[in-house]
Length: 342
Image (cartoon, rainbow, N blue to C red; front, top):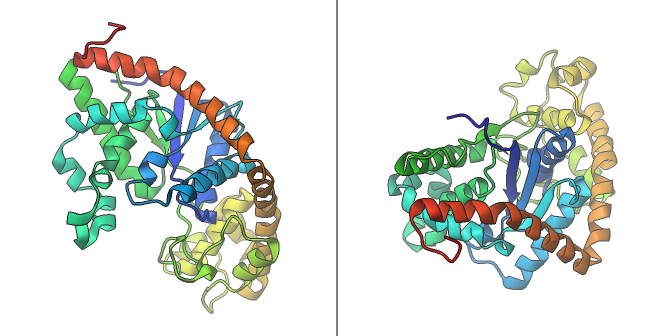
């Protein structure tokens, strides 16, 4: 089966779990904006609040985080008129299709998910059923819009493979070519942003040290200070990017510089070869302030008017539902559900 018969459409989402970091921007939002502006795909971008509650969330904080994430999308360059931007819980078809896919996906598939093992750990008996079934909901998120492409980071590739498995099994079980076999979009430098204190670990909002991450809410002085104090190593910058293979903290800063400047690793290395970190890190700090401060400023402006954010998300949900409802109804028909529209 090919995706030739399907509208070229991208779907992706981020959990509104708060404390947005540079990793969210370079690993996701910047790429979402680039895809939107390329104009090759219809873009559907979702604040996946149903996924967020697979672990307990304080209700008012979840609402605030959802609005903050919407502000982040818009401030980073997502245009709610060009792309569809909404929060997942406003389109009930996500949960409805997820139940169908719960009957398609196999327990063994879910049990093999690396993120399930990492998040549940030794305490899996006390983890929520929603956390275990998370990949089936993710498959529903994507396939509800017949998305042909999904921009994913390394940590989500396994879930996309499961989405492809669910689509293939549904199509086989019901003798149809109804759901596309969604393709990943993995491109660009710094798709995985690492800690500023330990280049072997992913940048995380849960790290005890605030100096390990760049928060999208950081002001210019804080941004500059964090990059100037970022951990590196005693060696100067090398002549080739390949020479950074065993220097994770150094490679991380070069990755970030390349992503923020929208240049290749090789171009960056050619310019800074032999440079000491005392010279390079201030250059990176200045670049980060130039690129990120306008985003944080626009986020603050948008957050001052939560009613406008709610209006934007409501309109996005209406547009999303216009695509999702017919696909869900056809799925029900294929499964054999009786409805008033049969």
